[in-house]
Length: 267
Image 1 (cartoon, rainbow, N blue to C red):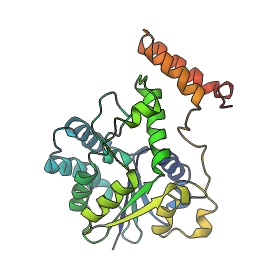
Image 2 (cartoon, one colour):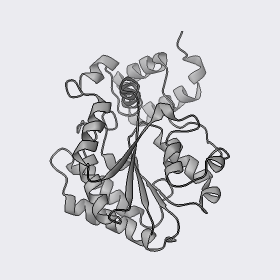
Image 3 (cartoon, rainbow, N blue to C red):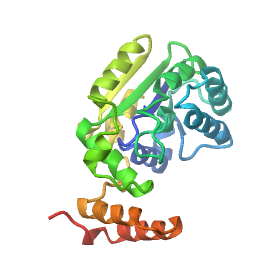
Image 4 (cartoon, rainbow, N blue to C red):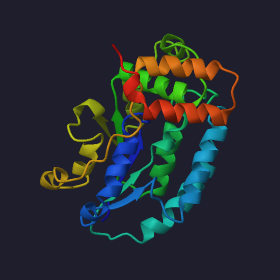
């Protein structure tokens, strides 16, 4: 019987690089697993987008588990019905964790949808044959990455210290995930520290799906996605964020900063 492996996050742990690696190596992976990838999702993408929208719109007030489950059923029913029964399925979508600090202007908490998504997916996917995978990251580096995105994407003007102060007092992502696993002890949840990957983030997920280590070593690894900006780049962008300019102009400047990143190195 088919086992479903679900990569559900965390955000800012190399998810886009992982998903692009799956995409560019699709032919190599196909004999070993069926991949349902958020960046290459087919006609059922609307169901997935509705799930994301529901999470974003209700994260602060309370997610309707039944409605989220319905959206996920719509998104996954067709692709799961067409899969080969002799190989595992890998689903990857870190958006199901919910908005993370720094993703949008409004702050809706830290990974507010993880509990609901785990329960909804467990109800939709084969019982007893679903494995959840969470890629984690050193807490300080994770927060810096969140801050990086806040400055790049949301006109955030504060310092790293200001941003850190918006998190719950004493919050630590490692302890948070440990508590999450304890609360969902009825599920098979596997934790993969990002720092333990020598090829690309999430590589252990593919090994857990049964990919031979020799095949893993031959995969084409795309250029890293969303690399963090240097301190001078962030300082310059904070000035831009505070300026009275329209969003189109701001985006042009942001893209130019990225293109000229060699001029903004830390000293």
